[in-house]
Image (cartoon, rainbow, N blue to C red; front, side, top):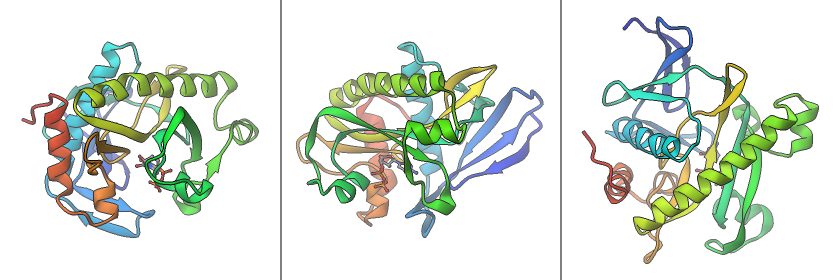
Length: 236
Ligand code: CDP
């Protein structure tokens, strides 16, 4: 397959294929945190995240969530539908961690009676500020039906994945999703991997996600691999 680089993100590269409706996403070993200030290569992360994302996207498709995922191509590459990305991040939180603790003065680990939903603007230069639906409409980042759809699907994903991780002895603390347009309809895009969510052991509250990298807790990829194993994913 002929491919040419069209976008290089912090941890993934996107390549155009012969088919203008499809792209190859390559998961690299690069890890970044604090808006790119902390940077490192973590051996095997690209491989683990590629297969982790494929596994989760397939589970979501089985439950009726429409995603951009088509198939795994290699250890570190998958074929996806080419999306026109909506520049917002959809975050759902089941427990208090990260940004919301600081912002609202909450104790880390507090369980929310109902999940919290937040929008952030995808803008590295601005540090991904929190926004609301009024901003999204005023600045034409998405249409009213698209806002409704992203919110609904992000909560549906919460039901599916909270159960999946719970069965593996893990708490899905929070996560971030991104959506994009394909032939006029929205699909779930980007990725779902331990890079974009928080996962804690149900009993010990041990951290199994990117906070291991952010907080220098060590053996980041080893923990990602443990999560993969616990949810029933065999790494090739
Ligand atoms: O990660 P941080 O504490 O700065 O932000 P947060 O708002 O607490 O993040 C909520 C969830 O979204 C966490 O699982 C983050 O890993 C994820 N997130 C992400 O994947 N990418 C971002 N640009 C921001 C948050």
